[in-house]
Length: 166
Image (cartoon, rainbow, N blue to C red; front, side, top):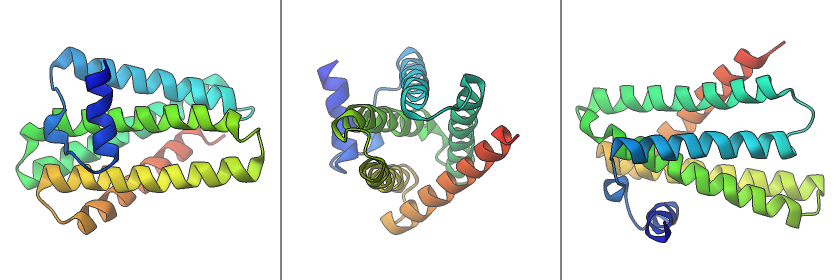
């Protein structure tokens, strides 16, 4: 377990690429399920008064959109065989970022400004990491990878927000 967390942590620190992530289907599924469950827990715990179904819809639409756009981008670049490692790296790093948020929110003492700043910094870090992952997976420049990751995050958030709009 420590070795797996180390792989994801080194990706978050931009030291290693997604090519070092195990791609066994059970591992990929485990990472995806763990990310979904932890994301749901953190959003229910700290996300305000939103109903569970709305939180679940937002989480699942965001993740499905990210996976779909990643699959399309890798297909267009002719490197679709890298999809399992790429998506596992993205969701595994998201799992660590979500865990970091879960640990930092109580330390911030619920101070709204501090929580917002921490959340914003982690969001920027996660976009940079996803850009790095895309850079390595698609053989593109880091700048294009980060721009792609930002665009993907924007599309995913927009679709998820419209899916949960009342």
